[in-house]
Length: 267
Image 1 (cartoon, one colour):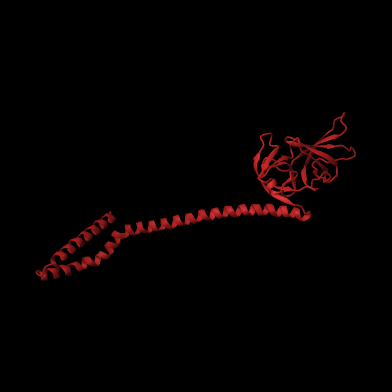
Image 2 (cartoon, rainbow, N blue to C red):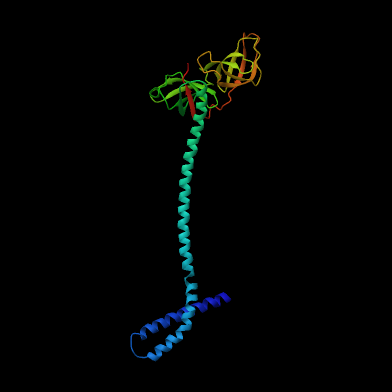
C-alpha cells in the first residue's frame, strides 16, 4: 500500500515538473509578467530539488535494461570463447593420444631397429570381422608382409594385400592366419591358427606341459618379431586318437575395437 502511494506521488511530481517547464518556456518568450515568472521560478525550486530523486526512480528500469543487455553481450562472448577453447582442447587430446601411441611404438623400435608405419583402420570385413583395410599402401612403402600390432606389443594380424594407397590385413582370428608361438613361462612350442572368436594352438611335443592362464608369445622362427603377445591359454583339449594336443587361446585385446595400428617390417 505504501509503495503504491509513493509511486503515485512520484508520478504527480513528474507531471508537475513537466507543466512548470512548459509554462516557463512559454512565458520566457515574452517580456511581460516578469514578476509572475519570478514567482514560478521560486516556486519550482522545491520541486526541482525533489526531481533528482524522482527522475532516478523513473529512469532506474532503463538503467537495469541497459546493464542487462551489456551483461548478456559479455556472457555471449564468454560462451563463444568457451566453445573455441573446447575445440582446441579436443585437438590437443587427439595429438596427445597419437603421441602416446608413437611413444609406445618408439619403445619397441629401441629394442630392435625396425622400420614401422602408423596406419588407421578405414574398413572392416563383414566375414566375422577377420580382416581390416588400412590407409597405407605401396605408395607409402609397404611390401605386403608387414606384421600388424597394437601398442604394448599385442599381435593382431598381418598385411596380405597392398594397393597404391590402401592395404588389406588378416586378423589373428582369421582361419587363414597362422604363427609360431611358445609359452612365456613353460616355453611350450606350438602353432597358432585363427578359429573365429578364439585362437587354437597345436601342441605337438607331449613333453611340453603348458599351464592354464599362461601367456603365449611369438617365437620368432617364422619371420615374425619374437616376443609379441598372442593370447592367454584357456584350456587344453586331448583327443585319444590325435597325435597332438589342441589348446584354446583367448586374445588379450578386442579385435573388434581399434582405430590405429602399427605395421612392422618382418625380417
